[in-house]
Image 1: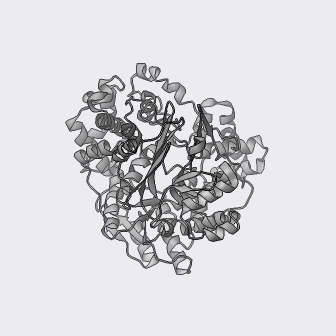
Image 2: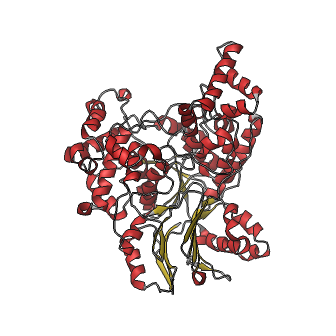
Image 3: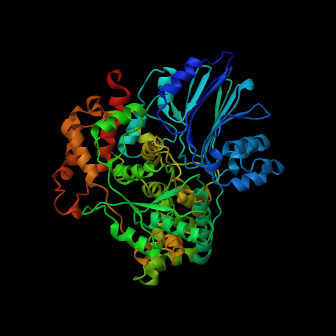
Amino acid sequence: MSAIAGILALDERPIGQEMLARMRAAAPPRGLDGTQVWLEANFGTIRQANATTPQAVGEQQPFTGPSGAVVMFDGRLDNRSDVLALLGPAGGRLAEAPDGALVLALYEKLGRDFVRSLVGDFAIAICHPLERRLALFTSPLNWRPLHWTRHGALVAFATDMRTLVLGLGLQRQVNEGAFAEFMSGVMMSPTETFLAGVERVEQGSAVFFEGERTDVWLWHDGPFEDWTGRSMADHVEHFNALFDQAVAAAFRSHGDVSAQLSGGLDSSSVVCRATELYRAGRLDRQVRAISARFPGMPQDETRWSSAVEDHLGIRAEVATAKPFSLEAARQWTASTWHLPLRPNALDTMGGVVDIMRADGRRVLLGGEGGDDWLNGSLAHLPDLLRRGRLGGLAEFGRTYFPRDSVPVQWAKALVLAGRPLVIPEYRREILYPAIDWNRASAPWLRPEWTRNTDLADRLQGTPTRPGLQGFTQRSRYSTYANGVRQMLAAPVVAYMEQFGIEWRHPLHDARLTGFCMGASGNHLRNRETRKMILREAMRGTLPEVVRMRSDKAAFYVNTIAAMEDILRERPFRDTLPARMGWVDAKQLEALYAPVRAWDPGGDRANLPSAPYGPIWFVLAADMWLDQAFGSTI
């Protein structure tokens, strides 16, 4: 992995060393293996190196090709063997080459369609300096961010937007619309950032710059294979093959590989399957599990993580929570222009990072993705109805309403299938299952401000890709395009990478997620059980107490304590969003009152259901504005 940046002059002016030096100085730290600067006439690049694979050790960028193409590559390929096969005889000469060299060779052979053949996490910049053309590409889930800005004949890109704004000396202007989306808790825009004039390359897309034109290509668009009608046994067999492939690909490292072991279904599946593959001779090392534990607190999952340890005959390293520090959060936000890390992220990541840093480990596997792809929803029901698959609807009725008579089962299934077809509110809920639309009205935002920022119109967007088929795939694709997930994950990724640690997610593997896009909805869940395919696939792999676990840890104690620390020093009325007329401090106080009244020393299971997530969004936005703009706002 690495952080990349570059600048191209689309006219005849040269790029100076001074400009690259400013961009380099403005870039937040990522990686441990030095910084490489390259300049040739009208195109210059910067790379902060972090070697996490054998092929990346000693790698120098950019890569240059016979066509004059210059390639910057941030990321990891998980299907190197496939790419080498596509390259034919040239692939044999590149067997041990860095991933970016393979990307260049495939681009030289296939042109821009090369990106459709890649699997992994990546952000790629390809420039033809003599022709003054630049293209930026991102992978489907966009774990590797890539930002860009265009000012006259200058186009610049960077992993972090701070690199662009401070490095190029751009005027800082707040994008109030993006803040309105963020503080409402419904981030719909796939490209906007908190800064006007700085865009994010949308997940699974490419942006092309040539002359005065800026064009976008949504390259990741399906179609995804429809598995409706296939048996559960077929689903489980295929899932297991893809999961094994994903875990093995995520293991490519030049050092030991660690994995989070929370005791939840997803992270436990990764640890247990990796151990099975090692014992079967399919991996060259045993995964080193790390378990974050919180004795006596509601988020403690020792019971379940210990069950995994006993099942495998291993012992995990134990990490504890890293306390939230208001001063450290401010320093982080000022030096990176990322949002402050959520306290619950520090709960699980802070101690894990400290353990890995102690002996130089650089790869951490996580269980991210299980909730996104395997939980299931009711989005497949209108598709079954529209396509006349009445047998599928009957099967759903039997499993979802087993205590009802057959006519009642049919009636309930038909209602659930028909509502999204005729009622817009239900259709919206089906298409965006991750969004709590009951809170989308965001009464804590001032109505006049939401009107000025066109928030209502902003929240009407839908993920539109030509290859998506029906409600099912449009609904599931919203996981790829989930702006809130990307906004909240980006600070965690950046935090880990400043210490040289790459966070990898086997359950987000593009081959596995592509399968989940078309998996039968009836096999993903029933009324009582979610993640049915995963649970069936993990029979014998997981201890039963974990395989059939249905609850989740509640990571709220330290988050509430952190918010209390912030609010003691800066009440809602004194925050920048309140002073600028964006939020209603009295509404926020009322929203927060049940949380403030909760006794953390009492029955923690009785935490009030008040939505304290939006409270954190407002406080995080205030800290970002204060640290990134200060008195200039």
